[in-house]
Image 1 (tube, rainbow, N blue to C red):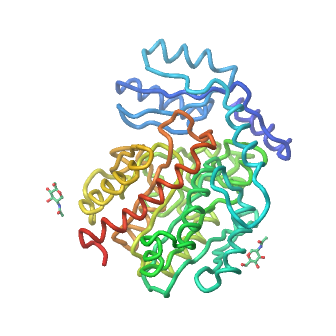
Image 2 (cartoon, rainbow, N blue to C red):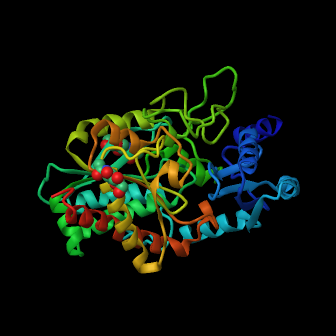
Length: 418
Ligand SMILES: *[C@@H]1O[C@H](CO)[C@@H](O)[C@H](O)[C@H]1NC(C)=O
Ligand SMILES: *[C@@H]1O[C@H](CO)[C@@H](O)[C@H](O)[C@H]1NC(C)=O
């Protein structure tokens, strides 16, 4: 608690300044027994260490960041219990510095370059430019505003006004800079339409693409606290004075809070006061409501873990069109691997990830049952996590777009869609 208060006062007092992570280390921790798991869960719950990726089952791994003064103690406690761990990065600040450096080198102008992370400002300006210069196929859509008043803006792309919708979202997690860029790259490919598959995809579907569902968290991660994940709405709970933000990726009205959330408002995985307690999820849900029944596909993107998740997070039972979905997913991940041999696991979140409920994909699947619903956990498998170097940005964009085209192709092949 003391540490939390300390962090909180730093964050609130100097919120205009950047918090630094000098000598914070990133660990990959692999539990082999139930006791190991239990210990890691207790550690996570204590909140002194930052769990980028919690772990819920033996065979999976946790990504944990330890501040310099806790590294020795953390390593000792793992060693004492014979829990296997590996230090992936000794100083995550260095990795962050190189991400920012590369970002700043982008030359001005309407052309986008996919060799580095894109800022919200650049993406939004470029969307406006696209809507002006390609007004026949691109239109701007602002579905609402974040708690702090920033637009949640996306684009609608269509050649021929198909009434079948393809919805894509990213950027629910502030610290995840990869998904907004990967999602924006899809806009680029679809608008250009150089590839015959991309061209046809924009004739057969109307695309609704939102790269940054959590603009406040994204901006705060760029300006102040690089590891910020949640939105920026202060808690109104008297038991948690000064706590800020809810995890949007756990705030949807689908088995909300049932699994994988921490109800401590200071936690990174705090799911909010209730389902749709947050402005961002509520307004996005309202938009999806207007097009949901005519939706063929819904894809959610975030960092990291190299997983393709299939509904539903709370269950390992095959539900709805599970068999078809898994077959399509596996084939699409085969396509994902073609360019750079990037391997993804495919399954429900309970099978291949942490099984956290209250996510957008489950909500969409349950509410509208589109034939194709997937959640991508993008690169990597925990070596870099949110510090993924910029030289992996373009490869991530390319391989992911390949796999999205493959989803459409494979779904047609087994007659799930026309
Ligand atoms: C936010 O969106 C509205 C409606 O689309 C637009 O008029 C306004 O200019 C946008 N604001 C900013 C800061 O981009
Ligand atoms: C799904 O696949 C499993 C295993 O191959 C099979 O037992 C089951 O009947 C299939 N379910 C449907 C609905 O096709």
